[in-house]
Length: 207
Image (cartoon, rainbow, N blue to C red):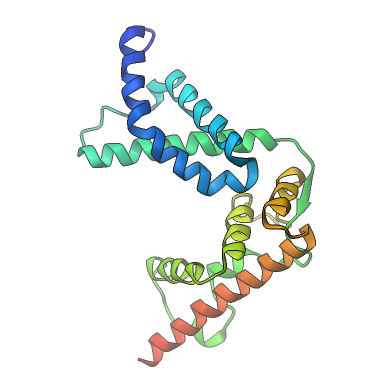
C-alpha cells in the first residue's frame, strides 16, 4: 500500500485492492480462532478494525522485499493475523483473570514427553509438531475448541497459566460447560495428546 502521507488517494485505492484480496481470508481465520470468544459480530468488528489499523500503519509492512507473489500474499496475511490477534488481546487487557488448571499441569508437557522410553528418542521438532497436529485432529470438537481457546492465552515460562475471566465465561457459554469442566477437558485433552505422541514415538522406535 502507498504511503498515505505522500499520496492519500493512491493509498486509499491500494488499500481497497488489499481489502478485497485479504478480507475473506482474515474473516475465516478470525472466525475459527476467536468466534468462540467474541461471536460473529465481534469477529466482524475485529476484521474491520484490523484493516483500519493496517491502513494507518501500512508503512510498517515490508512490501518492497523481492519475492514471489504467493510469498508476498502469505506475508501480508500473517501480518493481518497478528494485527487481529493484538486487537483481541487488547479487548481483555487489564481484566480479571482465572487460572486454567488447578494443579499446574500444562502445555509444557508437550514440549517433551514424560515417558522414559520415549524421552530417550531424539525427535526433530518438525516430527513432533506433525504428531501433535495429527493427534489434535483426533480430539472431539469441544476438546479442540477448549485447547485452541486456552492455548491462545498460554504464556511460556509462566508458573500459573491464566486467561481473562470474561473470556472463560464466553467459552463456557459456547461449549455449554462450566469453567471447572473446561479445566478438566483441557487437562484430559493434553493427556490424550501426550499419550498419542508417546505411543507413536515408541512404535516408530520399534519399527
